[in-house]
Image (spheres, rainbow, N blue to C red):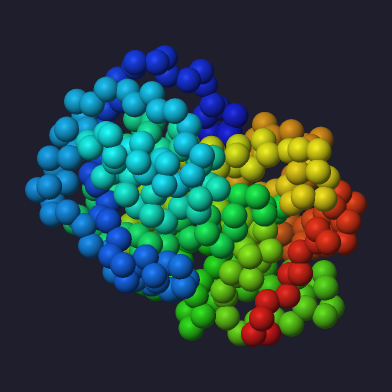
Length: 328
């Protein structure tokens, strides 16, 4: 089933006092080692409550009322506010620990909506899920909200062992480069003669320059493509995109203040971003880089070059992306 357009997800807010229910089981709190691993950009283990403890928390959350939280101005403030809601706070432990602070604050209202609190993480008790929990929100730490100036919309994470690490189209070094990413490299080489094809598929260097590589589903069941589609992630990632596209301002040289470039490859991505204001943003659409469709419009789309031309016009040369990747 294709995603709904981003604009279809935003309806009038739930009236104050409306019930907030949840069947979502808690995601375990991070160990000190895992938290340190996240900060260092490497994998780390996650410990958490037992399944029985999680079930009790879920049952309690089902019967909880609406939170009606005042907006927090920092991670610590939000954490303290949620501590007053013991049936909800444990369910958001992963988000509180691993979402980049700017994103956490921008999305704080979304995190306490019923659809999010009864989401699919209960599967982690019995199913193998990718990416690892500490990497689900890695895009938010590598690419802070205030830095975003390009968005590349993906679909769902790679579902093979060791592939996904939270950035759409990207894999960690040492993992075989996926076919779609190889085609992206081919297009880059055609657009920029000095582009050297990397020996790996880690796109973290792009993220650190303000390229948000966002899958519309942030998790997937191992070896089952699309298994977490239409479970709630699309509404959450629509809120992520809205946070980006709404962040316009007067400081025209600030990243994103004068619009962003959005690359939507394939029908799935095109439907997801339908309705965005193309006068304020540059929306680039084409076929997907998959081997099944790359020759039908992805090759030759010149999206990377067009993005830089638009960014330079809006933000001066300081705003362009260096698409070269270390390790070429």
